[in-house]
Length: 343
Image (cartoon, rainbow, N blue to C red; front, side):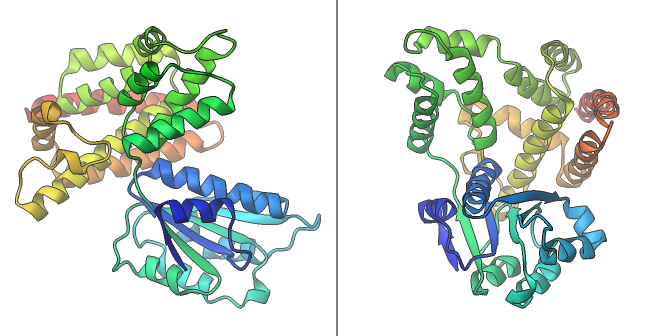
């Protein structure tokens, strides 16, 4: 079964009972994550379950962990929902075996989150063809989508907002759902028991103290090779208490965006491809972005993404937060020094 856009989102809220496996993919990992969460909640509502998150590397190294989890029946009678985040076709061979399991052997449900997959993807095709599976293709939010999303989010939390303030807030959101979700959470916290509608001045005041904005600026300054500015923003981030994993994820998103830009420029013969990226690179920001692309060719970015992935795993490990914070600072300094030398 294959579904796209709003049809895919509706399916996540009211899934087909015959569906045990779902591949959820799209260019905006935040939209993918939100839809995966909605599907998991729907399954939990129908059958109280335990959610088990498995790492891609662990599943590749020990496939038996996945099959044991799929076939195990809880002694308490609860179901199991397995979540795996992956990229590209890395788990295709394993998922092919999963989809071929006899239905009587499957006691759990599976959600596989992925990025962009084209129509030639073997993984996508396998989920589309399987009778007990669904492939949900999600698209990035438009400005109208984001405005509706913010309006619903605030309304559910009994927060009202002036139309002009909503327009300003949405206009300043990053073109990435997971970052936008964080911004909405901060706005809702700010407006809790405010006693009036959120106004434009409130939005501006909130943005002035935005730790995530400092973190994004720190990432861009580091990749641009501007040591003093990068370190100054990093100091603000540390003072604000932002977790190292949040900074690592911002680096991952920016490095992935730059990798996509390299690929698009190769396909189109160069030029400004900024508006095809998520979040987009506006025309005024393109020269600076292009300068960073020159400093960071694709092979260096691939190595950086791999190193960032290792840092994220370290941060998630028991007692690894402290080590990850120190390693993140070291990486940050080495990045802006390397970018400065590349200049």
